[in-house]
Length: 128
Image (cartoon, rainbow, N blue to C red; front, side, top):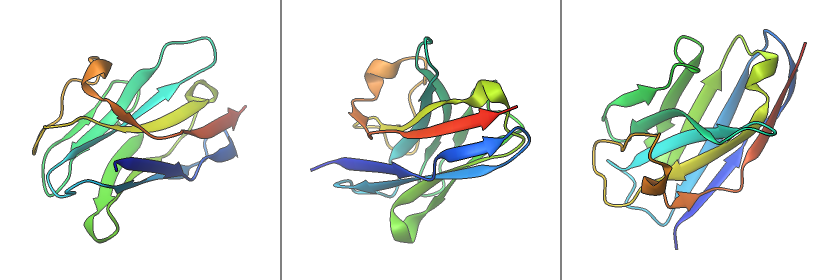
């Protein structure tokens, strides 16, 4: 059974950092795509970053470039999202998600229907 479990959210002041974790189970891990999305109150869910594990490419949306870094720990079947220089507008529920059948590449994060597997989310709150 596929399962994604996020952790690491919390409350920080603007300019601070957080590292989110997404532990995956039920997958043949190496080579799969894993992605981070977020949804702020009253806004649509949007992609943040994605990577193909096992040495594949990484992808970032404009909101994440330069401040967020996606990485992996293959031994732990875990993908991380390191977030720096956080802003109040980064406040959102952050979700880990994965597509099916994609190997060493990821679908466009604007096509969220390509990501059928989702975690429960972890809340990030950035205060000014």
